[in-house]
Length: 299
Image 1 (cartoon, one colour):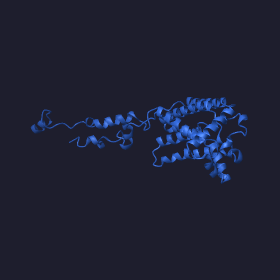
Image 2 (tube, helix red, strand yellow):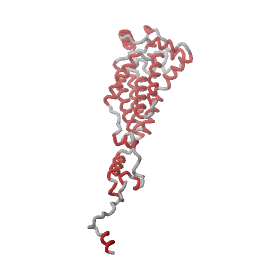
Image 3 (cartoon, rainbow, N blue to C red):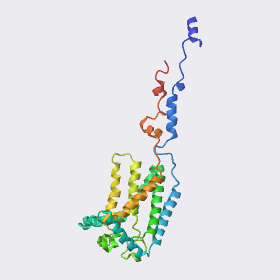
């Protein structure tokens, strides 16, 4: 009995087993860090849906109203078109006619290009924003702000630099594929078109928005093939030029505006902690005996 009493004496050399909770400080700290950033794409909460709908619809209404303010400046629009056509020749940019010539080899191809121009622009951008809103709230706020800046800058360009598209410029030698093959979103007489301002070619929001959609999807997806999203702005560029709705410089200026907006509005970024969450197993649900810090704890 004396030997058993000595072994139980706390002043002896044998130490009591360490409690399990004292052996996992590192695991607990990692768990706390993980739970601090529960969403792998940022911690920004999803904005209220009604507010966003009002915001987006209001922005579109202001843009459409602003575009229509620039109507009736026919002489100025054609003077700017002649000037821009000369700038493109001076810069040795490719002739828009080469792209249109490829489309005109097939009536079906020309019709398909017109359909793409008329039907893809708004739905693709809207679908992009809806997907971000539902799946990547932080990136949604970023993309919406970028698109707002680009659209506002484009509206200023439409008001200060009215520009007749190449399909209306006789010097360009191009045809209006929309009127010839259909469908078209513009009236035959630009001066009498009450639905759209046909002298708002500079810059091209068709291309600017399409490029932002591709950049946004590349930033928010992890597929090895995500670079294929660039097919959307590439195809859009060929369509807007081939249908003679825009000049090359319209797309170049839109790209410059987008670059400025992207430099001003920074995207959300994943911290080291959130990135590690994908590489490390979730420690919160594992039994105490399986935690790395417990190896040999009871010896």
